[in-house]
Image 1 (cartoon, rainbow, N blue to C red):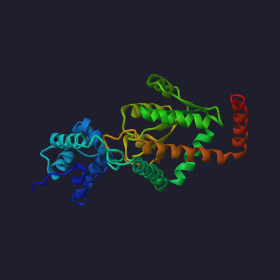
Image 2: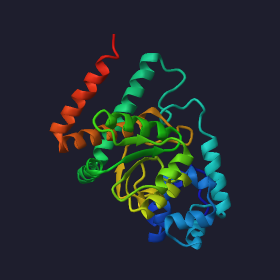
Image 3: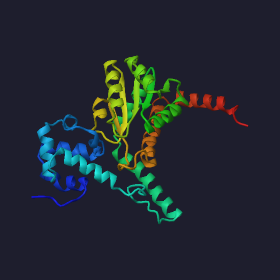
Image 4: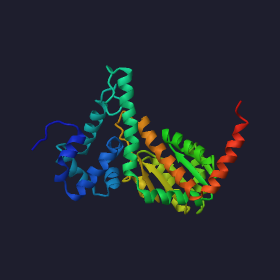
Length: 286
């Protein structure tokens, strides 16, 4: 029976408990990577979900689409049909006053941190802090907007320890990964956890025996599968909302938690180093 027209997300949600176990793997992956699926072949999607191509085809037909191509077209139309004025999941509207807009964005930013706290795995945070505290060198990386977060993390940690480095250029990232050692740590930022660069760099880092910490929204992603420790941030983004402030705030919140946990694991040294840093910077101020 044909399903009347609705958003792809709605179709997946309404049909979820009618899927087979294999089809649920496809649904779980797509709910975190729906926009990315537009750029995937059926083979790539099947591989990412850990299922056969036939399962993907059955999944699409169960949703009411004739096949995978029709399914991808529906995703594209859904993404392209979003209102250009949408802010945070459509909450901010053109008719809002400045105070109304401000209140909505404050709520979105606060909610992002609250979600991150709800998703936090304390043991994973402690283990990640332990890796950073014992590392010979820590290289902070990301692509695009995520690189800005990596730079912020490297700057914050460098106020206590000189072994944190932000590597910005993709070529230098590749070179750095190729020269990593077993005592080095790669701290990677990727909201999706599914870019080609992250997978290439992580595979090289693993070959070198280095440990990898990933900060991401999606713990079920190709990048997360390659990381030693995954720290999940909150805040959902739509297709037209890439790089939102709430998503960045949620990741910076994790950076703050990591930094303070590393400091707590060697508080006397951290305090002494912070005092030295403050003294060095004091002469820069008028």
